[in-house]
Length: 218
Image (cartoon, rainbow, N blue to C red):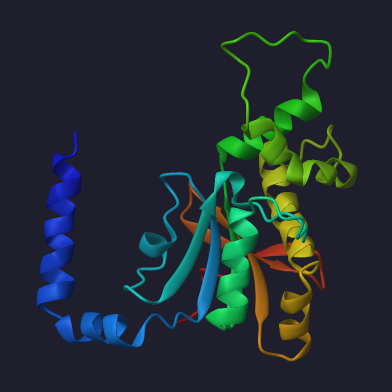
């Protein structure tokens, strides 16, 4: 089952290490200097490096279930996402942060079920999850912003987009993120990847809409 991965690595080595070794050596000697942090989902269909055809050193990526950003909470706990954001902003000095959500997200699907399922339903050992429920609850407050009976768009897609907006709000709770934004050293974007149509929609906070940016001229 790993043969395809080994073949892929050999292809990567051939194209990057043999054809552009000077770039690789520069990354080794001078370290990474990515301009963009992408906070993406762990979903195997949404790899930011593949989606954006990025080369080594171009993107600093954080991947987790449902591409969530928690609120700022320096309580001494184990905060993997927050520590990676801190490193990207304070040490790497990235200029952009992109929250990259996507259609048909399993984590958001799990969150949607908490909005619609019977609260008295008894969980079994087969259905119970020890970590996912608490994690996706980071975005639970988006329920206050949606109409569960709205049929204009699937609940799944609505919550996926609202969760992106919620993660943007949570980014603003990090004081050094907010300072970098105010100093005009950092830009925040919320993007949603439409899996079926191969399009990227970007959140426009002025009109509170997601607009298609993948059709823009190069």
